[in-house]
Length: 139
Image (tube, rainbow, N blue to C red; front, side):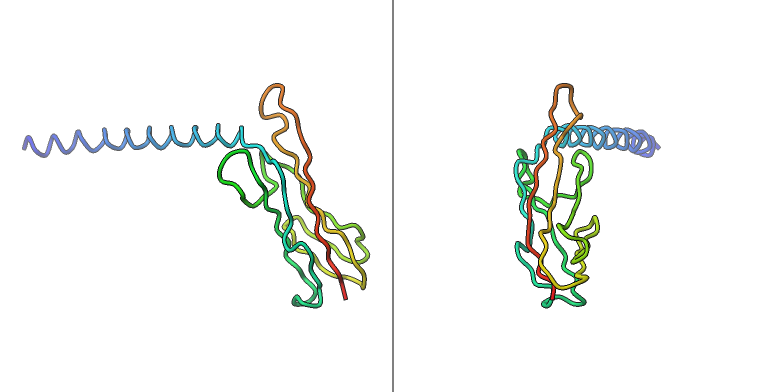
């Protein structure tokens, strides 16, 4: 009977310990991400021809170099980073906020990804806009 009571008391204590440990890890990650700065960015593919992609749709990806690991990593334009995608001429091609470009007419456009780094996450922090570009040729 003593063995059963020991096991009964041990189980809730272990659960509380594991929950506390998991909670500590989550707070640490949040603090690390708050101080993680985007230093530079590239867009891939750097040059694309819509003729080589199904229905003239090209998926672009923004990769960033960050001040803390993981780096390089994909820029997702989510907090603490904001921004998005644009094209130089929406009559030639359009692009959505996931980086999927669609050729509309013949011509060449510049595809741009722009991200703002940690802006107001800390008192006195500055926002810095970083832009990277690629070229899309539409048949």
